Amino acid sequence: MMANHLHHKLNRKEWTIDIVDERTEHHYQPGYLFLPFDIYKPEDIIKSIKDFIPSDVNLITKKIDRIVADENYIQMAGGDQLHYDVLIIATGAKIAPEETEGMSGEHWHQSVFDFYTFEGALALRNKLRDWKGGNLVIHITEMPIKCPVAPLEFAFLADSYFQHKKMRDKVNITYVTPLSGAFTKPKSTAALEHLLQEKNIAIESDFAIAEVDNENKTIVDYGGKAIPFDLLVTVPTNKGDELMARSGLGDDLNYVPTNKETLQSKAHANIFVIGDATNIPASKAGSVAHFEAEILTENILHFIKNESLAASFDGHANCFIETGDSKALLIDFNYTHEPVSGKFPFAGIGPLGLLKESRMNHWGKLAFRWIYWNVLLKGTPIPFVSAHMSTAGKNFN
Amino acid sequence: MEKIIAQKTVQVNEEGYLTNFAEWNKEIGEEIAKENNIALSPKHWEVINYIQNEFKNEVPLTIRKIGKSGVVDIKEFYALFPVGPLKTATKIAGIPKPASCI
Image 1 (cartoon, one colour):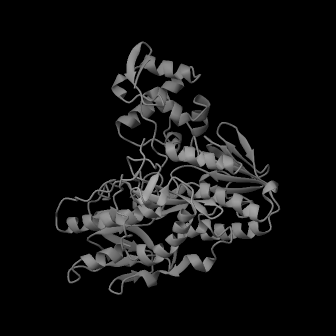
Image 2: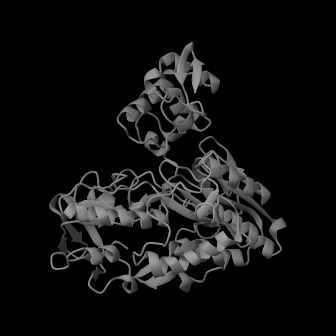
Image 3: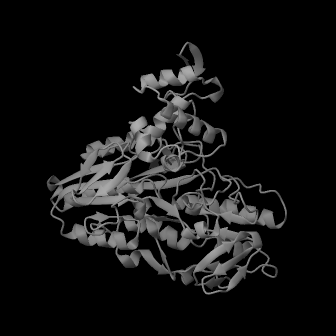
């Protein structure tokens, strides 16, 4: 995304752009949510990285050993070094089941699953295809996590999936969260808890997991509360890339301390950070990285001209929440404004309703996959949706 | 909004967290603890002092961080503040509810 932005904007007689990625495939991570329910197929969510790289940008498919920030170079695993004038870190966040005792034990990908990896989502699909029912526990280990609405969407989609399979009466669904309610912001929590109730999904809040007890098939919290499961779908602790720990650039969860407005690293002026790799208090959602990219492009151009970093990120996030039965909600928020009801993107008109279930929002969510591959990765702004959140058309009281 | 805690008028938000740490004192801490059915022991105060210091240093607080603080481990932290330990401990300490959950 940044390469696509910058290759238009930089003077290419003075600048070369390299992208280092150890993988050759790019995954549409929001698609992992749909894989377990046979809504998407693997081929819908995987494409070759090189299809998205502009022809005048070098793609280097290698593993990085560490970033030597004090000397402005990257040490490759093979021994090569790559020097830089400006570095953008976009290494994302990953699950770390090993952070919780017993989680990656004998039941891992047998009756304990994640859906934040391709392997996990696929293994879960195969499990669900012939699961006979019982206690389904959907669980968040600790915040922050990528796409904080995904586990809720999983619960809603599971309800709808088992209804279509005519076995909803054989499945108890419990949603277990370390938060004190269904979501992190008050108004959407109220709306989402109402939906959970309507769909007969039980909620256990303030649950801070201490361990997965593999023998008794329960999850146990620090207060001693135990919740039994036949099938546990968990979102393990999320962490930034190990590379940040190896390079001494991360915090205790390997996220890079970053200025939440300019997106500049706090420790090194010529390092910028985007997306889930930062420690900024914005949602770890794909839309956030998209909005950040526009701000970051401006600030990098300022930086190389020795100007002050004038562009300021406001924490804007915009998320569709699948609620099952071909309906979805839409939320739009930032650092200071929580999601509320209203119309989007045109005040008073919509066509999308905020914080309200509709089929239109569901089609919006499905259309988003096309937008992702064809618009977002190419760094094209989404029409009518700006990097800064708009307060027009929203009901704040 | 205003609230009288331990005979002192302080500013609190709708969830009862003090909005100005300068208005906090030990008696207020004791009173909020009592409202949450907690009798403060020296160990409780050690934790409260630790999180107040982290707040003054502008370090974001998480349960994970407290577990690694050397003051208590997570299990002890839960034993001291049984229901939502970080939320309760920050409320008693007179600092904002941690915004670690987005």
